[in-house]
Image (tube, rainbow, N blue to C red; front, top):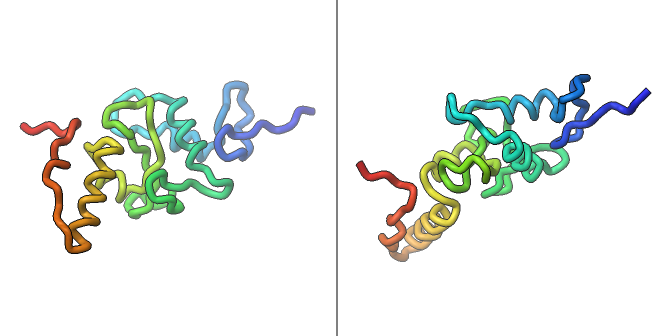
Length: 139
């Protein structure tokens, strides 16, 4: 009798199928249609899930907070973020709120915007040059 196979991400038992690599939960996340009707990179998504798994749950790449999987409207809902918009090969886990804030920004642009917001909220100024964004279409 062979040992039960484990999910590549969370190490739960996988379905008894010769091609199964993931448990039902992780497979469901990998197969999400985000955005709809766009082919996704399964291996990139598995890498993102693996990097975000802390042994008990998934964590946001940007904030480190524990993500929730059971409420798609929660600000901490697990989403897949393209570090560079449109690039399916470089994905991380992000809380829904953070992913919506980042939307069309690269990771570096997002960090610059957040740093400028911190400056402004601390009584300083906001450097307008951070609005020169590489992925923003101005139509």
